[in-house]
Image 1 (cartoon, rainbow, N blue to C red):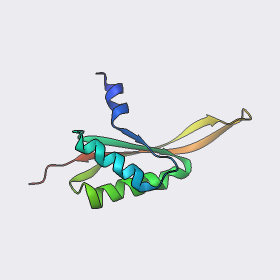
Image 2: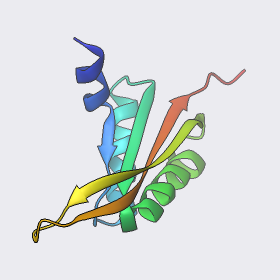
Image 3: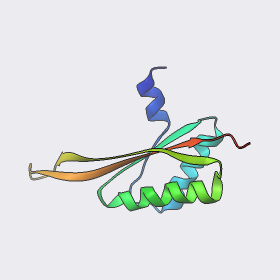
Length: 99
């Protein structure tokens, strides 16, 4: 498996569903043996991605910590052919070993 395939497997894309849907997906990834999960979102879904990371970390996978947060801007083309900039975020959660 290449790094790209592995990254896609451990990536949760946040959209318009309630945060608990994405929390379930993140917890499922951790339970299936992943030691790192990336939560990605754009635009208005960014707050939902942050909620997902915090709910997962505080309530369900208490030994998870935020490894890295990347923010950026992506240029997308709408139906009329105009470009618009949309903010994006990537939150990497990783498991820590408690001692």
